[in-house]
Image 1: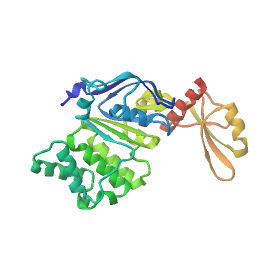
Image 2 (image 1 turned 180 degrees about the horizontal axis):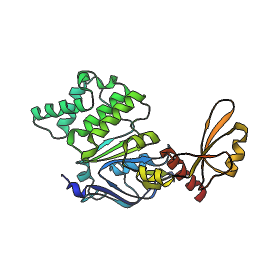
Image 3 (image 1 turned 90 degrees about the vertical axis):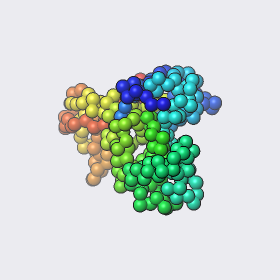
Length: 301
């Protein structure tokens, strides 16, 4: 099933999920996600993986709805699976199988009967993921980053229109992270990629739209550039003595602090005007956006 590009969007409405142990993993989550790269940002335990698994039809929510274009996902999960590519946080591979052999096997499972077409596509995907020279190496001996790139290669076999990747850069070194993100950039213009992470830099480097999730609830849904612009003139910084940090946190909305040299701490404070003497206004960052959303949730609780 090929969706009309003009109607390609993912609509999630009032999605709620409570596990048998009473944990409320999702609480009335509503998001509209358009073509391109969408980042889901939140701390560990925020509900990101629960959200991803529900979208991937691996578990059913208690209530709410999911539509991808004309597909009613909860009523017809098989229709979504035909156009879905899913890369979970951790995935296993068959031992003692080369990248080439494993991709051929997956392609056959996905109904690609023409061997010549399979081989051409596999060559293209190994080239895209920068794994062509390792095609005859065993996948179970790949590095973490190589396995993640192989995961992208296998999910692209059916030319998915919705790609879900859950914490894909966790544990990767900087070089592997860049290689992996470059692969996602290559394919982002053709489909929707939903990318969950707890790393602000991943969102900043990749995504044209984003949401912050915590406690199973959406705290913010905004384009990163707009979210940063909204905080312009509201972020202030100052170096203070470490011993004064607790007192300053009681007096001001401290978003973050970084320890410096000689017992000094650099703090970033949210305020519509200069909090006190010695504070300097600085350009906001996406990290400030994230911490502001988390702070507002704490204040509202």
